[in-house]
Length: 470
Ligand SMILES: Cc1cc2nc3c(=O)[nH]c(=O)nc-3n(C[C@H](O)[C@H](O)[C@H](O)COP(=O)(O)OP(=O)(O)OC[C@H]3O[C@@H](n4cnc5c(N)ncnc54)[C@H](O)[C@@H]3O)c2cc1C
Image 1: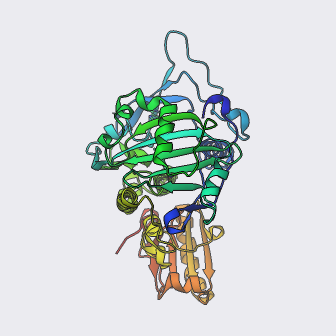
Image 2: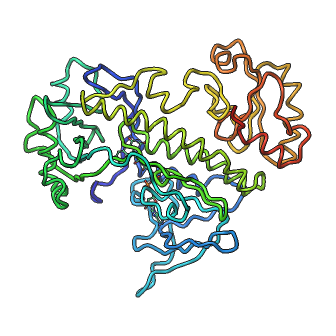
Image 3: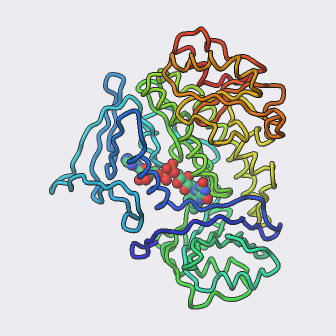
């Protein structure tokens, strides 16, 4: 969107429609970056916290070097400053009152950091500072054209053509002998859309697209999109191209995600790149953040040493990326041949890629506890979940005593084994311990992990927080 068009976007949550196969079971919701960033900023500004938190909006990391086992990070103020670009229209944003850059040179400052987390995107500069972390894998998966356009009446046009199918947020096409194309509604009120054309390789795309300036010709790109779509009615002169770009979807993952000394970790696109098929990229990044957030808190609060806190992070999150990547690569192949995707329904390939083996409802160490209501979870510490009140009475005192010893917030709750979801989750087990991100670290018939009742605080913290996968 151009600056003049920026306004508070609307959120939509409707089914994603795979036209050739009926309505898919994949639920869909736009994460609007302006809204999402605004929510994060407002949370950072207002959340009660146990430690001091300083934000540096509008500063670039320009260098990071080791100083006595810590990071010395050089920040440089950007020209644009740290004001959020949607600030005008959205509430709850922290104001940025940093001084304007000095004439003749940018303002710089150096901060010391015990841990550096590279969440700086696919071209991550932090990744270059982690030996062995170069991106590896399959590489490019063909080529894609994206066009953003406005077309009053587009929804009605699509509905006339697809009157026999339920309305959806996306409409997918594949002409005989052509390449898959789709149009996605961004904003119902303004009839703003974006569309994709997926090519098997750059050489299958029109030559003008790859000659640099070509893809920036949004009007020409819109013609290519319309030609690839199999719409019964022409889009006509009311279709207005807003932006376009020609890009490469990647399947890549960093060779290494963490560094011990000085301590560093990668998250999001800095650690992995996924083709957008399936919409996993940001989701996996948010999963990384959920897995990293409590680890950083554990370091800052002194519950765990950095090495212990980061142990298991890479293996766990790499596995999540690999599940999604396998799905994406195979679904992209299906898309190229048939023009449609198959989410697989409840418990199918899509959900399995997202949730892992616990998609079947059974609890497993190292995966989120299925069907744990958020209200029961201690999101700043550990949660003990036991089936039945008698067991709760037997183990809860030792659990709480260990948490007090460590200084970690805790919650204990008992659930009803007669409930179907609980019975499916626990099977023969009756006791689970969950980390702050709801991942199970311990599953047992009746006992707490070794070291919780009688170990020192670091032993007990590791036993409670770190999953020992079978
Ligand atoms: C066409 C397309 C469609 C997609 N669709 C989906 C989808 O439907 N669902 C989904 O889940 N994902 C989707 N994705 C993927 C998703 O956009 C990315 O996975 C996600 O944005 C990655 O977030 P990130 O924060 O890791 O990296 P980025 O979004 O790249 O953010 C990195 C940030 O770091 C900043 N930065 C970089 N270097 C520095 C530095 N030196 N100093 C300070 N700051 C720095 C950058 O300015 C940027 O703000 C799609 C991607 C594409 C290309």
